[in-house]
Image (cartoon, rainbow, N blue to C red; front, side, top):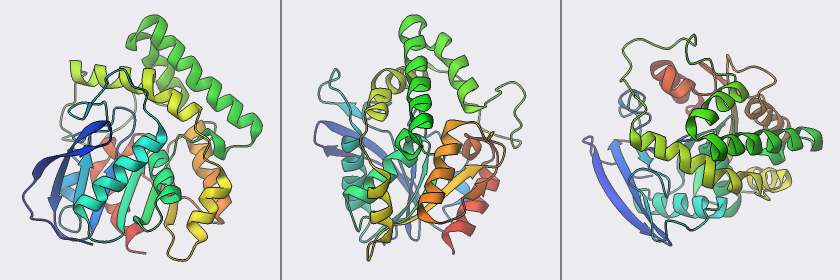
Length: 285
């Protein structure tokens, strides 16, 4: 794995159908942080400073979000597109298998990379992946219906209608959930609202139609030189939340215990210092 300068650098990378905006900072093994819903490279601005002493941290805007532009703005986006983007990005910044911590949508993309691009990832931490196919048939149908309901709420009433449904389904209480002190304010700017709209309107169909099979994930993890996959859950995420159930199902599939991270589904942004400590401990094993 490569080492980068300690000062942050911001770059772009042309990939098929898009141009990716990404940021590199720190020194040591390459660690890609793949974000949850709104997919912005700066979403983990409070987490990165606690990792750059150990890792070369890479973050990026997913295609179609923030500063990562699509060649055709109306084109659909698939999970295969996202996996290819990550493989090309890591080929650009790493000289060998990299580390990846994926959160929610980012974890789902990481599993795609592990299956489609053997040898790209050394270790993947998959924190509450949004992968309905990991669940038994009834749970899978419930999870897809949940995502479909959120998308319908968005199409009918915009983000104001979708946010309560998202919070409810992920067990998030934006008013009463605890956080660490001193976090960087992240108001709902027009860019963030646009990202949520793209995520719900365009990326949800990619998730609900994804054909990735659990057996493929198990083979990718078991293959010689395959990816070490570490399922992870938030300590305060409720047991009925589908993304937590996906992580638990992934752990059962791999014959492992899920790693427990601080906070809930968005614990990486609510508890960045504690998340950094947990990431370092898990990746050191």
